[in-house]
Image 1 (cartoon, rainbow, N blue to C red):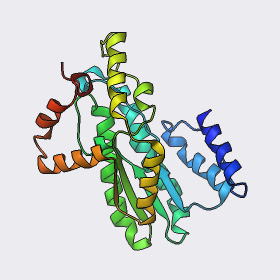
Image 2 (spheres, helix red, strand yellow):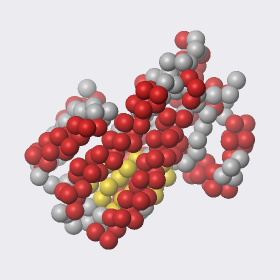
Image 3 (cartoon, one colour):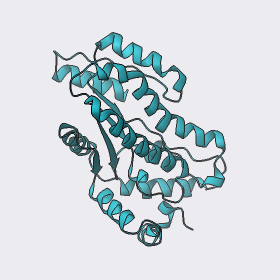
Image 4 (cartoon, rainbow, N blue to C red):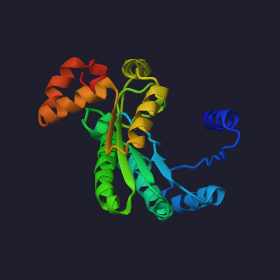
Length: 240
């Protein structure tokens, strides 16, 4: 429903714009080349690729199964790699094309209870940096984005690991605590990201919280969690 609403809104605002939607499970990494072919049949050209889809999963590492951990990697990281690979030939054919890979604040810091999500977002960060260096001679820009607390539905929709034994009340309290940290309007986040893309910036950090924690992580790379765990509620940090 959300995708259909956005597409219809774009068509109403820009009647000359060709808008197509392609619902797809990005966990099916092997089928992503078919998705890319479908998009190219509908548009023939790709000048900007934004890899924004992501899923979260709550629980400490010992509370997750390997299958649960791998599901997050497949959607958050391997799908990014597969889409870049599938659409790279089309991007190479354009003048000044650009790739935007959305990492996270948790691709800068590694909080307790986010091993799968943080691992995937650090991977997106590293992949994007290498890709930027490799594609620069071909005129293809690459921006990696690190959003902080953007007011999306990710906290409400995130499952928890099968080994998590929290009561329904505790789970709801944790979701509410997380939602209180998600303050930035998504439209403002999008404006910041597009502003960075227009200037072909290699790295865009979105939100005051992300900028502050990026500075903390660079200042205290090995001990920032000792500081941060004192500032955040226990239900958010995973501390009891």
